[in-house]
Amino acid sequence: MRAVRPGRTSEITACRHDKLTAHPGAAGLGAIADRGFIGLDDSGPDAGPAVINGYKAARNRPLTRGPEAV
Image 1: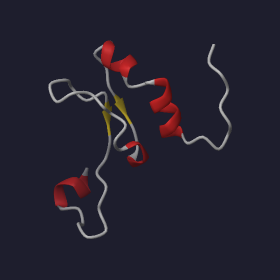
Image 2: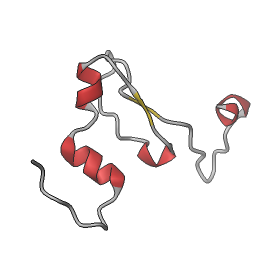
Image 3: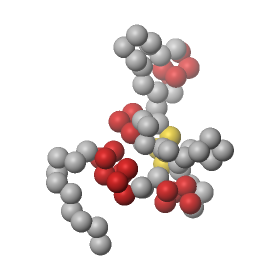
Image 4: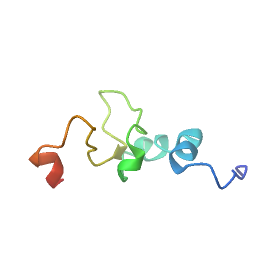
C-alpha cells in the first residue's frame, strides 16, 4: 500500500515518484496525457513512447500548422 501524499502534490510529481510510465511500457501499452505531462516519459530512444502528449508552443516559437492541428 502506498503512502498518501498531500493534496498540494502535483499529478506529474506523483507520477514520477511512483514511476507510472514503467507499468504500461512493460506491458507494451501507452497512455495519452495532456500537455501538463510533457517530459514525463523517460524511456530510451529505442523504446516506443509510454506517454503521448500534445505539442506545446514556446514563448518565442509558435506552433506550425501540423502540431497545431494535432
